[in-house]
Image 1 (tube, each protein chain N blue to C red):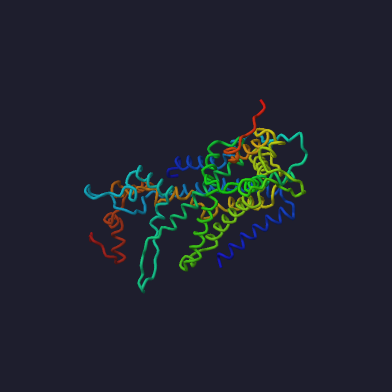
Image 2: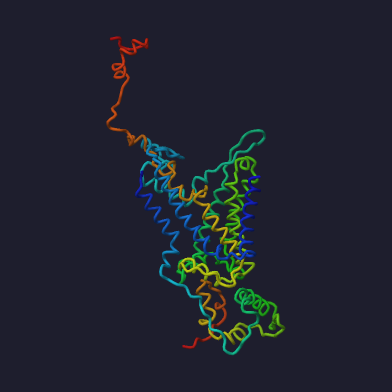
Length: 331
Length: 125
């Protein structure tokens, strides 16, 4: 049901853009005002979330570890799964962020011959990598619409992405790979009953929204052949703060743009914030050195001295005896 | 704030990257590239907007017809006959690659591989 709700929600968004631009002729709203609002909400919302997290104090080391702790010299220490120095932690973070190392450990639970079995399952890791890196490539590629002249590095990414030279306009590999990634991520939630049970609208909605964005983009490039220069005129108008709605911009472009705006607005308030959150996860970004360094609670008020039981009894002995409470020293 | 300096630095770098299209273009303006239109002809093989959007499909189709099927005649939607040839038909009117093709292609960062095989016309200097 949650998947269906999300699907209906994405369809509704598409229809809003379709009728908003196609029938109500509000291209100005969808093409100029909304993108500005969306970018502003994204930037402010993102900063707000990060600062909010930065303010929550996590002074004590609570890393989740996945390897042998630093111990005696003859026991081999797993440096990047159980780091003890800031340097090792840094490498652990880089591996986590660039290679999704914790997903590589993903396992699946199955009943086999009436017994519970655990087995390695790398597909989540593989398809997540495909999805995230394709998304990154696609975002970089889109920068050609926001710079004039187009920087060499963006043209280079485009060249690599279309290096197979299949069809006209050239087929981008990232377009297929992002759909493969998204398809798997959605399919795994739908297929596995255990995952389906714990999946919410907030799980399905971003997936379906990004699928909608990808499909509308693919449709524009390979099927409708939109007038790219009219679109560049619009996007350049946006980034030079002199917005225009040129002639000949297809309504599919406005649908695509509207879905992207929804994604930008939704981003800071959703689980998509794992993009920033992964850097601040205390279970990842802390070295496991609690047995090496003594932890001093930073909130301890130096004016509050330790109060032992003996001192406590000394203070209240008479009252305690009066009340009939057991005391260790009688007088 | 624990590690406030590092977190704020990272945040500023990220927001700077995301908003790069905006601050990079501060004070800039954008002019749509103006292609040089042919002087000796008024009509192309298809209407202008159609050519703007679909010329690559047509050229692809022309390549297949000429090289794979051996057909050298194309009949346009209007019923006019054209010889299928990039150099002898298209470039007859659009004489300059730099003033016509490249204008939009450079602007949109499109690098078609037409000229891997075809010889671009000599540019007037």
